[in-house]
Amino acid sequence: MTTDHAHPDTSSGSFLRQPRAVWAVAFACVIAFMGIGLVDPILKEIAARLEATPSQVSLLFTSYMAVMGVAMLITGVVSTRIGAKRTLLAGLALIIVFAGLAGMSGSVGAVIGFRAGWGLGNALFIATALSTIVSASKGSLAQAIILFEAALGLGIASGPLVGGLLGEQSWRGPFFGVSVLMTVALVATAIFLPTTPPAPRRTTLADPFKALAHPALAVLAAVAVCYNLGFFSLLAAGPFALPEAGIMEIGWIFFGWGILLAVASVALAPWVQRRVGTLPALIGALALFALDLVAIAVGAETPAIVIVGIIVAGAFLGVINTLVTEAVMGAAPVERPVASAAYSFVRFTGGAVGPYVALKLAEHQGTGAPFWFGGIAVAVGVAILAAGARTIDSALHGKEAPAPHSPEEAEAELLGDLA
Image (cartoon, rainbow, N blue to C red; front, side, top):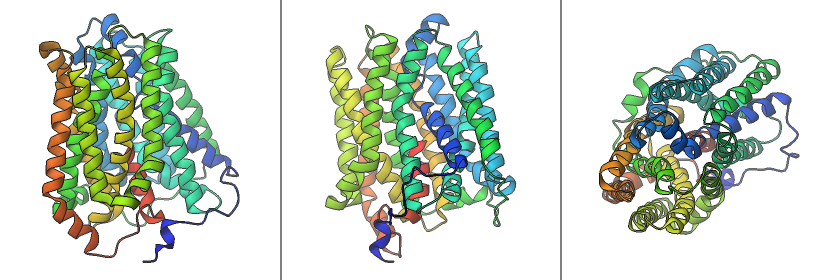
């Protein structure tokens, strides 16, 4: 394997000159990625309006992640049988329906349930979107990936801000906003994206479970559970640690978090990796994230510390997301979509309990407790990674693998980051 793949050619014209089908899917990607942080600014408002406890509204994250994690097991099964376009449209339709129903709900239980349906739609859409952009775009593969990365970053960063803007009008606004925007995306995708045939090889539900029998993949999936516990504890508990902050203020705080996460995923992670290597960079980023959570826990009564801690965490999470997923793709001796499905299943279903546990602790132990919980969970992830470093390193270098950030692994890497 030559190192040319690490620096793919991007000289074949501007990546902005793309067919309308590509722009339709890219627009839908932005809206889909908004869903990660969209509800953050309105968590306190939902709790107040629907007379719910913080731990109850945390289930908006838990239901979304748990269903999305399980659904990752079936996305390959579905798309290889009905084709990418139908899978995309099915995912978009589910998001439209369940986001709209969440906005019309009159109880926190109903919102939680419809948010779970949203997670199913998001899994079907996101797992298919990048491969569709790559196959439909003009120019080099690198340019298609840049376009997808731009959509990912814009969606993650703008989700909390859009949630804040619409949430200031009503807590229902963000849900209806997503439903309307996704309807536009569905119509555009249906009109502009050509019909795509089923894949020649059909994957099975058993494939991801077989992949988890490989020790390196199992270790990395366990690490991912630990950092997701910290990640989503931060998202869920952050707004409640700022009782004086309004909806728009929380939106701006998490907008800053999202900007740093997006920039770190695309630019900082490769830079650090080239200088110290994948595993040292990953251990360092996890350790810094754990310390950041502990700092928030210690200063939980000081809003400035909480705000800075939340925003800075975006940089650590961006590096972690990229490097741990890249390690999964390089270490697992199975097809990359299968490895990604196995890894995503474990990380999201395992991490789904984080928001609920974190806010239960906040209700009984105080504002700093969720961040202590998240910090300890991430520290356990550091210990697991350090203990399994030799196994992972052996898997990474024991066979011919793509160079870091090569086109061959970029698709699976980005899909794993998401969601």
